[in-house]
Image (cartoon, rainbow, N blue to C red; front, side):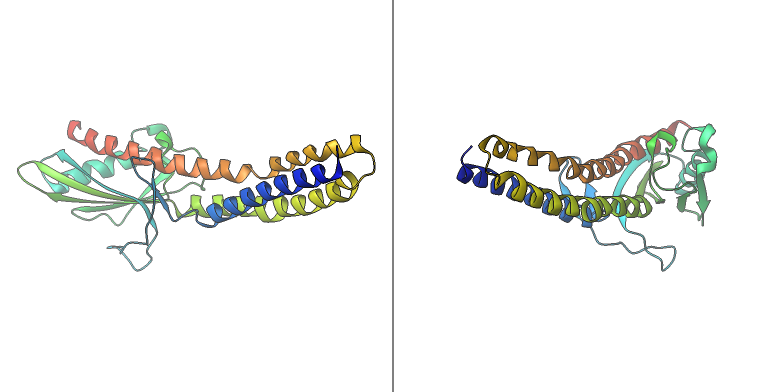
Length: 234
């Protein structure tokens, strides 16, 4: 391989690696500010006003569901019972704690560390439900889900991989390849410039953690409405 061609390949691969590293850093720094819509698009939400106290979590998922129930208080009572039973799974009833119940409001918080498997894979840290009558036995339940702890843990792991592992490997790896491979007098050794693609192995893990975080939000957004609809059959 001619040295000019080796240098071109080196800079192309290096540029691609830097772009991937920058994208992963940008995405990791925004973990916790994302909410997943049904069309898989990403919006950014500011923390919402909390009707219970001054400590406002970031509500990553918000939605409403209309069910058939006698009253708003009856719907909240049924929901509190389901939460006490582990969101439909009695084997994990100790994973959720009911806080500050009211006539038409309910808050449920997680008692397990972020990332621990939950009932029906509901990884939220806090959930608030507010029921309001919208007609005869027609109850609208607004729900808000927070993933603050999961987001913090995911962001910390991702940034550690990007800054403490990915950046040093890129700097030392590309430096070594430049001096010992690209500038080598042996044309056969210069073909090893393509081995710099191996550095990409330390660049993809942050995307894995981001994908798992978004999957947890998406799963909760699909599961909670089903749980609320099931209240009509209790």
